[in-house]
Length: 335
Image (cartoon, rainbow, N blue to C red):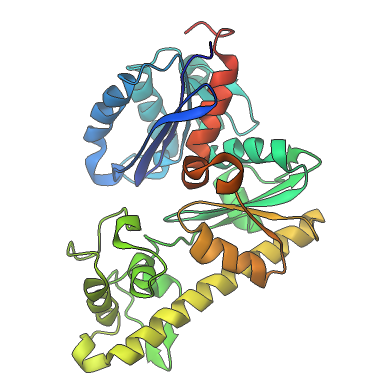
């Protein structure tokens, strides 16, 4: 009988977990947990997950980048320590694609920092030997080339991937509006965090309030009217002054610009790795509202990961992937 395995993705804004048993998702969790101000809550969430009874645990993280930690190394050590207090035998994925234990992770902390995209690439490469994997999240977009059944990125750290355009720091929820456009129809956008792309996509009906899984900039509602009012603030205004028609055009312009940027990034990566004619496998909370549209604009055939592995795999690909990898070593690793 296959033993249950747990995959964890410890992000700076969200903690994600997937429990697999017998090839099926038995439980999952996606919780907004901003480490920069609520890191003390993480231990409680991990202890809660410890009650799920997993035999194997695999972990990736990006939360070490949260500026509550003095350095990324210290962030990794704290996160590894938190995991180790619940699962002493947890395995961590390195940027080279190896699963290592707690001691090696603590001795080489940067080798396990921000390896979430590696986990996703390893999973996708099993079904698509040549493809571009596109994970559009709340904050970032990963562009992972799969060539010959292998994760082919020449850059591995986030800095290297940013330099090569394989990590785009734009997402469908937390990205501030002025980070996408500086002006719309000749009107400057206030360089303040009045509004984020989550407001734009709810306002356009492309995401529902239930998809808006992070806090709002003003702490108010996630309904379309509240989103409209926040967007108006980005123009130092209210809807009554700016006009609802203008604000809707602004939302459409912001969406088009984000699609353009991601599509441009896809074209560059596809050209660099010779992936013309190969599919774009899309995942993440923004796969339908941004990933799919950008891939089509880039001239790529689109495959939704949900159709291959299910909803949890598409929404939380790194966590799902780590559950798969951890499950494969249950029985061969002393937990």
